[in-house]
Length: 429
Image (cartoon, rainbow, N blue to C red; front, side, top):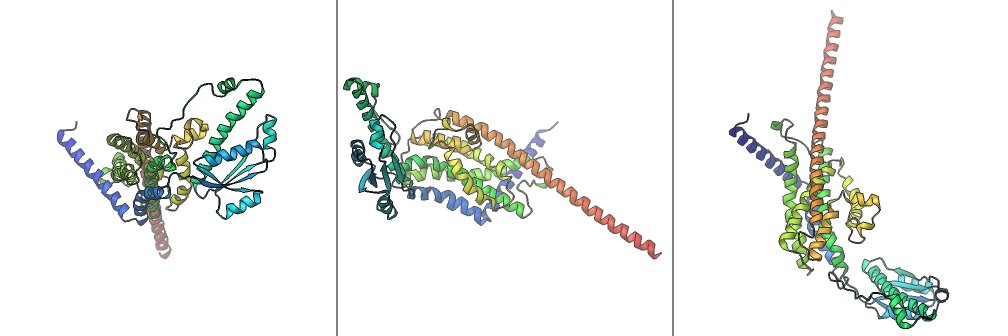
C-alpha cells in the first residue's frame, strides 16, 4: 500500500520527467532551423501574407469582352444587365473568339462571355439555351466576380423568360408573377454583405495555419530524429517503460504552450490589423483555441510518428493543405460531400475548428452555437491521445527489440570468436 510520501515522490518524479521532456522538445525546436522557419515565418507570416494577397477582398467593374454570335434581343438584354452590375464592366464587343482571346492574353480584359448562334433560337423553341464564360484565374477575385455577376443576371433573366412563356400561354402578368415568385423574398446577407473574398476565405484559412504548421514542424523533427537514429518516443531511463503518458503530455505541452501564443496572434491580432469583423467574444474564442490546439497536438503526435524522413513533409505540404482546406466546408457544404470525403474530414481537427471559428468570429455566435464542434474535438482529441500513447509504446517496443537483437548479434559474434580461438589452440596442440 502506497503511503503519502510515496505519492508525493511519484508526483514529484512525474512532474520532473514531464518538464524535462517538455524542455528537451523546446531545445530540439530551437536547434532545428527548418522547424524554426515553419513556426516563425510560417505560423506568423502566412496569415499576414494571405491578408496582403487578398487585402482588396472586393473588386468592382472587372473588364470582360463579349462575343455575341446570337445577336438576339435576349443576348443584348443580358449584356446590358451584366454591364449594369457592380462586379462586371463590358469593355469590348468582339466579332470573333480569336479577337477576344487576343485581348485576354494582352490582359486588357479578365474574362470572356460567349453567346452561341443558336442562343435565341433555343429560347424561342422553349429549349435550354447555354452561354460560355471564361475567367482569368491569375486571381480568384476575377473568377468570383465573373461568376457572381453572370449568375445574378442569369437568375434575373430566367425569371423574365418564364414570365414571357407564361404570358404566351395565356396567363396574365399578375398570374405569371405569382407562378414565378410564389413567395416574395428579400435577400439579406448579414455576415458578409459585400461578398468580400477576404472575409470568406481567411475565416477558414487562419486556423488552418495552426494545424498545418504544427503538423509539419512535428513531422520534420520526428523525421530528423529517425534519420539520426534517435527516437521521438525516448523515455528517461528511470521510468523503466512506465511513463508513456509523460512523453506524450510533455511533448504535447511544449507545442501547446507555443501554439497558444501563435493561436492568439492569428485569431485576435491579425484580424485587428486588417480591420476584419470580429463578432465573437474574446473568452469564447480563447476557449475554442484551447480545445482546437489540444486536438491538433495529439493529432500531430499521432501522424508524425509515421514520418521516417525529413523530406516527406514537403510532399505532404503540397498534397494535404488544399484537401484539408476544402474539407472545412467553407466553400462547399459538408452535407453535400461524398461519403468517403465526409468520413475523411472527420480525421482532421480543422474540419471542426474552422467551422467553429467561422460561427464565432464571423457569424457572432457563442459557445452554445459551437457546442457540436467542441464535443467533436473533445472526442477526436481523446482518441488521438490514445493513439499517440500507442505510437510511443510501439516505438519503444521496436527500440527494445532492436537492442535485444544487437545484444544477441554481439553475443553470437563473441562466441564465434571464442570458437575460432579454441579451434586454433587445438590445432596448435
